[in-house]
Image 1 (cartoon, helix red, strand yellow):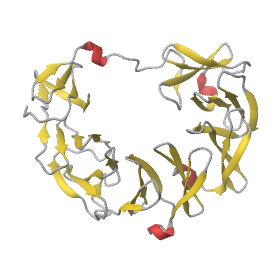
Image 2 (cartoon, rainbow, N blue to C red):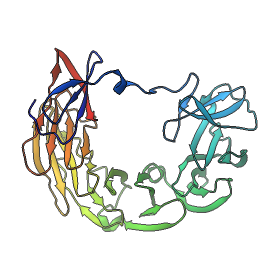
Image 3 (spheres, one colour):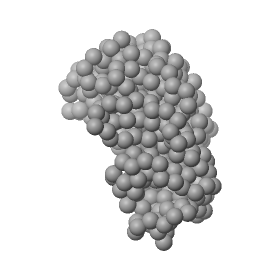
Image 4 (tube, rainbow, N blue to C red):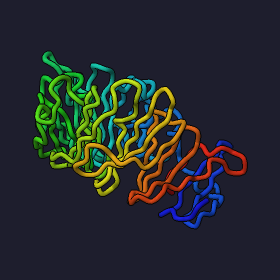
Length: 348
């Protein structure tokens, strides 16, 4: 292929062979060692909220593990035949948390310690960078969102009376959790809390929007009518891209920012023809610059990944393109190698 890539790209063909597309333009076999690694948890275990972490039930004990190693085991035993009996679970170096049954008790344990029952009908949503546990609970007037210490004690209540749309809108942005509460976007690191932006001032006056961390410290605020605002981590507006027509087009809300948060990639797909245009959006712009037009796009796919100032785009039929953000022409990666279709492409 044409030389000029900033780094190698790993390609996997439909017959499971692995190759590297090198900056020199050569295609080189990758070898099996690049395809090794655990892709499934141990038998009877399921993945949980935590880096490469699983949970299982073993002789009545709840066990969290990483790789083949059990990193925490409950002191007590419970009437749970499998991990499917756990309604929620989360693990981090700060501690472990699990809830038995939809309305059942929540247990929390500090790192290396024993669990204790701290609430009922409250479920673990995930650990924060401050080592506190974010939890949710259904109450008479809506949902409550709380922070608990690693020993299970209550640190603070973030909000009460939340709607289903509000609790579904929360997102991780960098090391913080962003959430909606009564018309305001809030941010917490698991200890401190601050208001980022008022929804009405951003043009969201009806149903609550959704929040998405898109990389580079940016957050996308996306309404159901495709009204779209991209914010910086301090709540200021980065850009407000103009959406396509409401009908006949899709994939507009799938935004991915580069690591420095200076450029955002998105695509607009014509549903009837499956043709897509890829755009790069920069600070203050209302419409991105078109950098690629392709056939056979999938509006339900997540086709982007960044490497510095280069964007990798993957289409539905296996064609992939490395796109420089400085205006140079994209480089097309080979759609087939030794006759086999390239089914996956990612930065090595």
